[in-house]
Length: 337
Image (cartoon, rainbow, N blue to C red; front, side, top):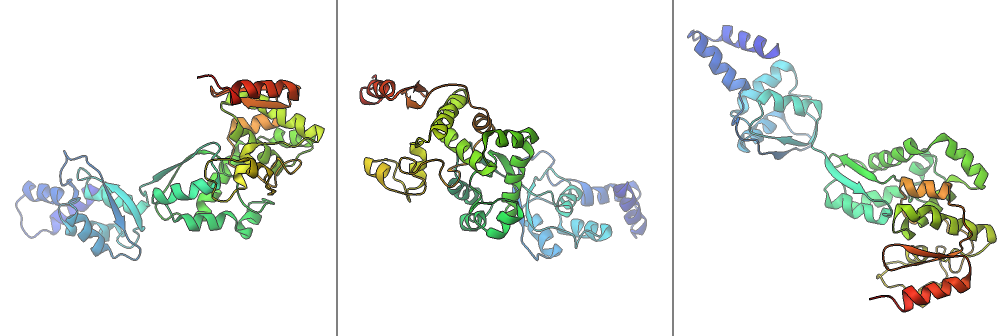
């Protein structure tokens, strides 16, 4: 409708009367794509405080429209020349000028993808966000421990570790860190079932403690199938007052960990060294996925107190230290070739 009305107005206002030819020429000038067959895409950036004339000039110089004047005229008629939102947009020479204009005016920006994997810590998210060009790592890491934001989200912890839900997200460039964190935390809130709060009461645990345990289960498990059994080991140990002795917690407490955990590391006191402290560490060591959270809430029924990796992506579980030592000798000290 807008297209037909605009062409009619321009046609009537045109001093050269050559009939249908003028109408078609105007249609080509204002509405025809520069190259209908070229479906290749370009990321076009509208810098903050750009003038529309400057935007139109850049569109033309980058080979996205036939003439800057066509989109300038069209934008003025529609009153959209002052409503363009700064950001990145994905355009193609096969797009009509009015389609390009509408995309910028509606703020349908190009979205950059970021995937937060199960078991990733907040230390790993920042570099990924910066690599994808979404925002600076330091800005994100600073926001993760912002007291005001934590209070706003109702989190009684010193950071958001464990409260960001693993998923694939899409954000435009320069998305504020607060917006990213709120989005990731909102996904956790959406998946948290009301009956889980009642389950926490049954377990005599807080949500923070549950997420802490779930994060340990996530880091210890080689597969989701084993998570309820691993959870049972930790629940059994907690109920007996035994130390958790979980290597991933020790690693989390080591600044600039080099990938090789030593006997000295296991004996060095830190708030996260569960070979030294009794009970759970002060907070999550990663962001657990849904299966690990469920496993922490509903552990398998077992008498297991120990487990050791079997070298094939799984674990061998034991009820006694004697059985465990035999498994360690079999799978760790004398691994199969």
